[in-house]
Image 1 (cartoon, rainbow, N blue to C red):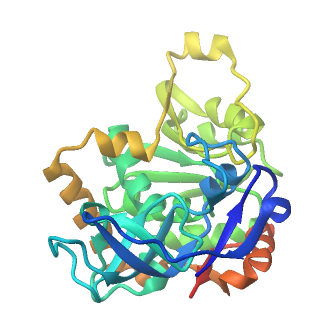
Image 2: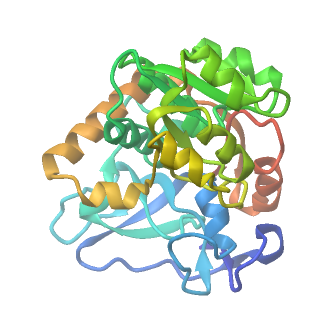
Length: 322
């Protein structure tokens, strides 16, 4: 089979390569999946660079999220051959993957591969953060990097609960797109002082921030919180830590906490996990026309896919398909 691997951590364009490898043989509790589509997430790039919460065991394939078709069922037949499934695993940029049968999720018939391969990480993270935030109808949420895949999911999910949404973008051309998705306020962080504009437009500041950027933008976002507000940090797109204003934290009684999907999922009961998937997949099927795909590439074209992923102003996902 073909797979994209890296033998050393580093910049993707420098360390990734396509190789031939034996097709893996599933254990009795696993299924063999022929991967049909994978999306490129920021976590994939950070993993390749050795900057993620999971340390790669080298050599390693890249990618965490994908969908495909079961080629060989597990010994107990929990997931039959021919079943379309979505899943997460370490190393999905390959033609075949083995995954424990208990960890794959059957793809609803109405859901395309383009949606299924990105139906877990970003939308479930958006759902989980909204649930954990405690936000109520009428309260304000600020999403940094609002035009990201996560941002667009979070806008729509928050609006369905009556939450008011503010977003930051880096290009004016992205404002109308997010407003059409339901954003109440969209601010260009490159040309506007968000720490002034947002508090003025939200009657004193937002209640909660979902920050995926960090760095100086994270600090400016923090200054847009109202008294007693909270910032939930789940990414570091800038690769820079947020410079903290201790006085701001003290006198406005602000809180900062991290969110990692893996940890949140581990804390759910079976019933809570089922509710999360049912809610998210129902949302995705209903809004499949709003799930953006910028471009699709084959595994052999992974270098072109990386370049497309890194292109500024991109509004849709980059997929690796088979």
